[in-house]
Image (cartoon, rainbow over all chains, first blue to last red; front, side, top):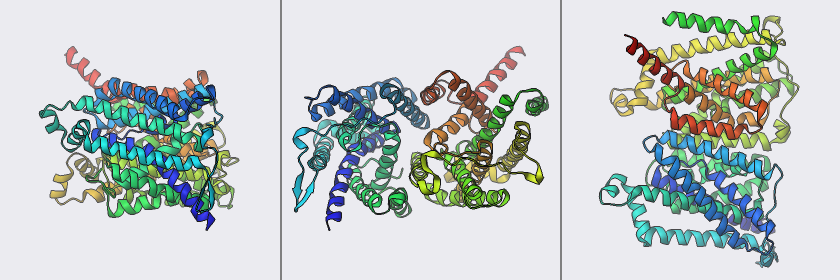
Length: 288
Length: 311
């Protein structure tokens, strides 16, 4: 029983982390029709930046570090979008390829700057004491992470559904040409959404740091998870990313705990089922 | 004019073992292997319009199956080769069914996810694949009792296989089936209206490309006598894709040229700098931004222009 509850809570925290990773990916894909393969690298860059900042200034709050790293990664993402991606508007395949190239550059730059050893990210001191849930001891930080993901989901929901910016983004997702025609600055929206997606990934990287720690190859570990989440949940759907993250969180955690060597195969079984019976994903409106 | 070019290329392929040292012969063998691999990917990317980011799966899986069968289970090379090619082709058939449910970016993401799963498997299932240590101490086959240990003999072997592969792929794309493939790439709806089955045409191409990917994987493991999970990584798929795009996707010879350039760049660059991945990324950016059509079409456009001007 204890095993199931502990692993269940672990799944929830991994699911939360995956949402922080994949929500940005899904947003970017929805608006820009761009599979941003740099996303794993943005996440890893965030983790490294957060790890460096938190180790350099021990008094620094992890939330501040996450915010700072998120802004830094968003700025890098914005520059990349403005300088490179906009030149390839008519070439969607080229866009994917440059995001792939960019991911190689970022991950190699991280290896160059931070070396090959993994860098642990300290858990915030006020969250180090374990919490008792249903009489079981559980790391507080993981619970807080789930809260973060839910908070981020609510904020993104309000941004998309209740603000003017969100309305413009939704218009751009539904019909880009028509949105342009009625005067919505779609190109600027692209930059904003790309920054936002990159920033969430970067901040998510910092928040995931205490669990994952920063190591070379983190990007290659996280990118397929993000891909599987969005394929499962439906590309461009926030709700899909949310549900998909927790499904994959559960499958991956229990898969690793029960069949450690086959975890990777178990991961993609749900993906195959969804692709076979519902190619647009659980909550997707359009096929990829 | 065309035949002079063919003769030039053919004679340059025969030259390395006769004049060059072992280092260059080995380099030439590697180029041939990378060439077959890029050509097989090009069937998907160039002729089928299906951009796969998981083509290393076929190379890696064929190499792993052959390595495991020969080193651990005592199979002979002939049987191991047949099983690994058959296994890889069967895997391509399954992956094709999954990935071809989507097209465009969805196809790309699914192929990437599938190949990442295999890469993760090769890393994690360490009691089967030996994990990060890779499988070392492999041997080369001895077809008809001829040893392939010397660089020159292996080069001849690779050249024969590569020529055969090139001819087979040329027949494939110039056949009626190849025309229907190009039709499906450009106008899937019209092709469907004409009574073709676009899905089946794509799937057959996917399986065929997987088959040749597997062949290049066998040569790869014979050449290196060692296999490591990195050969299944995205970097490995991306290198091949860069070769295809740099050389000009959809041309028959372009991808082989592109693959050769990527390999040469990798070899020379790694002698001076450690950062191959960063260079690969920068080259990606450069090619896509500056020469999106690739080097071979770019070059032929240039020569056509010169010919027009001289007239």
